[in-house]
Image (cartoon, rainbow, N blue to C red; front, side, top):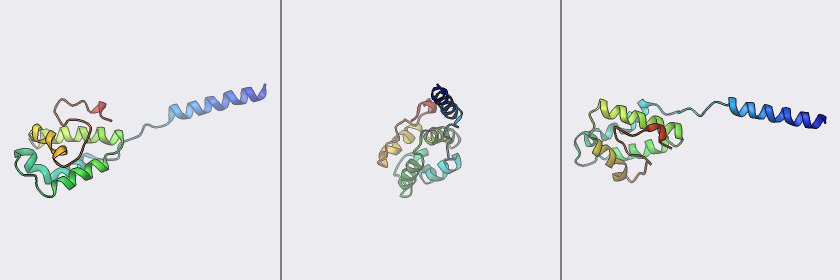
Length: 117
């Protein structure tokens, strides 16, 4: 009987720990996202040839944003930066593929970043 009560208490403690555990937080910042993509700005605004330092930045950003919270944060930062820097969304959507990177979501004004994984 005592072992049954002890088992139940242990289960309750474990469940409480899981429920109270903090959700994973993003470690990437918008400043980092912008720094990775700054070499791409001329292409993102005007199209044309992709600058030589652009694709290494795209690949670096993709490597830095591996967790779901980081990818969601990067998505929001990309949307915000695209508005601020007057980026052509068609160029933004094409850039990952041109750099040989698959990011798993489309860079667009209407992208729901909460659904990015």
